[in-house]
Image (cartoon, rainbow, N blue to C red; front, side, top):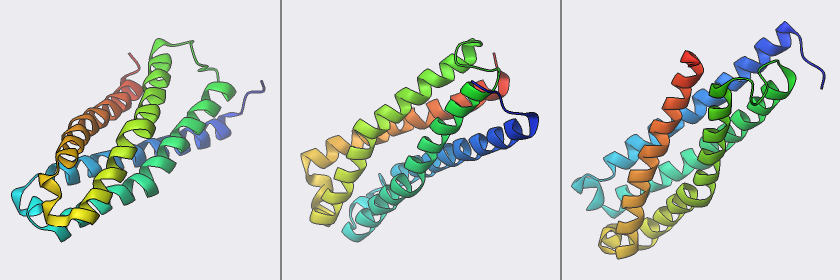
Amino acid sequence: MKRIGTAGRKWLNGTHMFFASAWVGAAVCMTTLRLLSLKNSVLANGDILYAVNASIKLIDDAIIIPAALGTLLTGLLISLLTPWGFFRHRWVTVKWAVTLIAILFGTFFLGPWVNELTALADTFRAVAPAEPIFQLLLIRHTLWGGVQTITLIAVVFISALKP
């Protein structure tokens, strides 16, 4: 496959960093909102509970999904069009594996949990926290969303340190 020049590589890397930054920043925002949603004052007020969950869903739909896909696409182009490749350096291979796992985990677990939490908060409002399924999804999303966020931050450091 044909390689791109220095200017093209810089633009591609900049675009990749933009998407990765948006993904990580949105994940930090979602995690922060999720942790704040655990406060009794939020859980006791159905309208606030729904608003927090709807905000998390909006961040997921409007920023996380496009940014994750943009990161994946630009990473693919960087691997194909520059000397970095997919397997030349172990840290690039690790980034690929973590990125793919993060996207799949978000698609099949975190995203559906957010959607369900939002729907339950909308339907049940102030009594949603008493619903066993809401409690289970809240624990899962809080725990695994935090793990996902920490993992994405770790990938940023892998990129910077290139161990």
